[in-house]
Length: 309
Image (cartoon, rainbow, N blue to C red; front, side):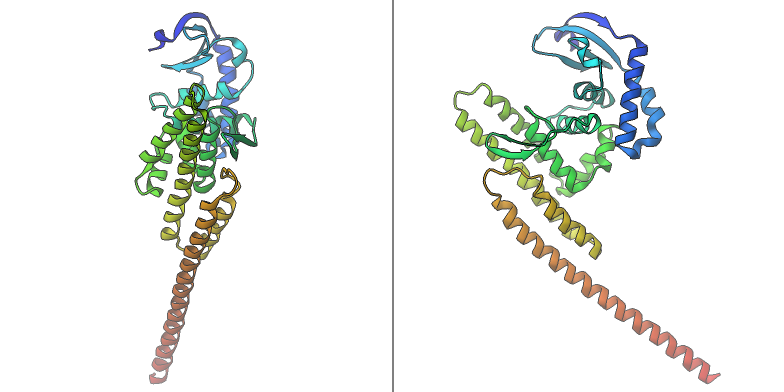
């Protein structure tokens, strides 16, 4: 309940200011996620319904919080410009009643960074070299979301983050052969290990556990996507696309010194894709021969009928 977090309401942001913020966010959403261009008016109307209040929190370390259609900020700084925190809380508003798991929150941070264009690059945390759009507790988790995004695309992601439907979860559940619960559970485990690192007396032990969990999730993402892909490939163009995804994925994966799982997986997956490519070519060749035979047969019958006449 919000009363457990809010100590005192200091000020309510006037509606005209809320409308201005809502308009700027709606414009960014429709510009960045172009598939929602036609939804601008609908988005604006929805975003204008959100309320913003400046408040004192029971926890002095808390600076922002969303509950029941209201965003609470500890001061006005967060409302002076469109920033990551403001956008993330508006995403919570759009996703009202959706459980904000660590996986969902990682999606939100990723979306917020895309919308604010305040992007980070390479970094080193817990001895892992990786790229992420954010720093801090969610850096590794957002990196993992970036890997999924690179592989599966953004269409369903946008529908889930902005329109609050289950498209993205259903897609990943399908690709992972019904194992999305494992993925979301592991995201939770990784996040809480990262929090444990701040208070533990055994930094080495927790750092090793963070690495193990991160690489377990990372390798699982690669494994479930490239297990699913060859089975459902229907043409040679899709083979080429899968090979390009496999090659490009290494630019997103975190590493310590070397990425043995990727190198070994790369070879096995390439062999699988090449095998599928040969099967498709053989099938295409058979189909082509069948068409030639059919055309010759039709021509022969026509010639025969013409001769009889």
